[in-house]
Image 1: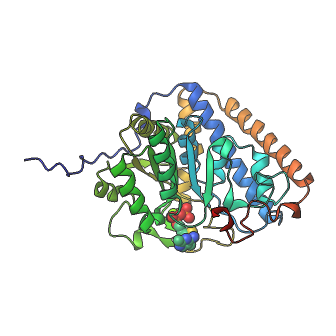
Image 2: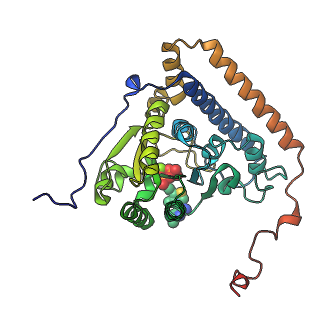
Image 3: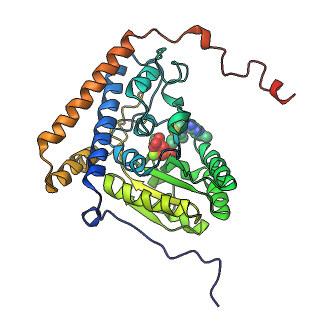
Length: 346
Ligand SMILES: Cc1ncc(C[n+]2csc(CCOP(=O)(O)OP(=O)(O)O)c2C)c(N)n1
Ligand SMILES: [Mg+2]
């Protein structure tokens, strides 16, 4: 007799982008996003070097295809939850670059008027439901948002981005179990960039794929994709969204990718083996996508023009941020529980 609890057969999707049919308009939209995310992060890095960004921050240079492919598959009203490495996910949902850079620079024109900084980017109107610095904290919160949608009969999906290291946190397993049991409309996206801070994930887990190899424990398919291939990310996310909206429950998607810079601004990343970064740069998501678009007949000039248009946007945003006043002290005590957080209960 078949065991009802046996997990469904493993499904591994590798990069099969040549076989993927995506309208050219969608592909151009994704190229634009890739270019925006790459150039914005590069600008953020330059602004650090000029000491114009205060506090720490975590760049996702090299990981752009995950944010771009996922956002291109989302619909307005879908909710995204990300980590402290969240600039790209915030921009990809349509938050203006001036708002993001202004927030990083601690200016009054920032997304939260400069009070939150790099690790707290949030924009409810864009469905960006926060950037979480506590590892794993946002997985149960995404479940809560998805449970609300299920309970109310809404069709929005919650998407939760996190790193490979997060899969070793208890909240990851609690959230996966709860979401799978409840068939919640939530998509969990593990950005496996091989490192958790300064430690290779491979050194501390007994399986090869930190997220996908644990999926069977929750009755979910094993999904590993080339996270540097924006078409593959887009297609896999689209399938997961369709599943969630049809009431069939969560998905867990492991995207293989790599971060070009250190964990945070303070990290020169000297722990990486010689040649590793160069190897991944050969697999650069933007370089690869330009090649694919070229094979589909898109001229380099057209892509260069998009890059130039985005650079101008970022230059204008940078100037506006530099001209904006610093965060006003008036907002220091707004949106906080000055009474310790208990008065509202009375
Ligand atoms: C609960 C908790 N433990 C430890 C930390 C310190 N910490 C910050 S980032 C990080 C590594 C996370 O790695 P990963 O999930 O792979 O994400 P990545 O930084 O690679 O995007 C750790 C351990 C934290 N912020 N929260
Ligand atoms: Mg990591």
